[in-house]
Image (cartoon, rainbow, N blue to C red; front, side):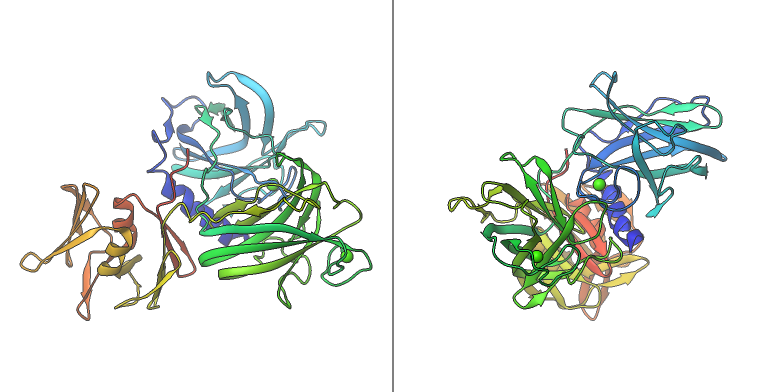
Length: 457
Ligand SMILES: [Ca+2]
Ligand SMILES: [Ca+2]
């Protein structure tokens, strides 16, 4: 389960490589360490995977970074340290994250390394092992809400032979999540209900803080976790934490949809999602209370999904004027497709396809008419040349049926899978066509999400 979730994150980060403004930072030369750093980026702060000293969520989202290096014929990487700097690269010593700390009094936080969706270390470890050739690693740095805009980060990668240093990379956070999910309403209700206990749903003799949330989910999306934070009026955490999956801190956040309880207890595996949802959900939210939820206190609700995290503004309990309402349309387009299914979506609108998407040479093929319309592109068909031309905003993509060479603005590109005709329907590789028009593509268990959510940075 963990691997799957990280896998989704890997897809997103690899996708981002080509679209990050200014491109990834590249380093100059190899050094005595035996590795040559190629790229280093701060990707996002979307997921809560680890805590300060171990694996598992703790209610704060983690810094998520990526490094690409050439390890040559084989180089042991003993440790990686993440450090904070100013824009000139001078240490600001605001925080330090490590894969290994030799000294018990060292109060550095944990840095978890992920390679191809698998965690290389889940705790402090004296070596990360030997890497060969071009190596891409993702890094998760547990964050105590300290990582912030304006700060820069770099890595020291310690091998048996020396220490390689990456260039500095700026902090990055999404202005808009990729999640096709919006918190439409978050309101406080009462302090008199008793629906949940500390770790299991069901009355326990103590009253709960009772809230309501209306969620709008444009297309099928996994909700990984919901977290209620006690905050100050600016939304800064003040300590209280209720969540749907067990972590080092926090009590159960009980969620019910009508009579249907979504959170009977803490998830045994803290990475197990609450479930997959679509449409508009009216949810009752109960936070077991020992007096920490009270009139005058501020609360923020956070919903973590497979595509990113959305959060409300602070709501002041007991204040009749205080509620969070968000009626803004999604700030991006979301196109939903499913392998072997004729059902598709553009935002919330359902469509029936002429042909179901399928896999060809490892690529996902989708009907051209649908994807062109969904992407807002004009499509032309030249029968003599068997050529499909898509145009949008001055971009031009040409594909020729059964031919692997395609053309983007006149430049030749070689595809893994060509455009094909099946039962008189023309299908094209969805990733190639979408990315050529500056859209992002995410895959998850046969579900395909294409979105034009704004670039990070
Ligand atoms: Ca965390
Ligand atoms: Ca209770």
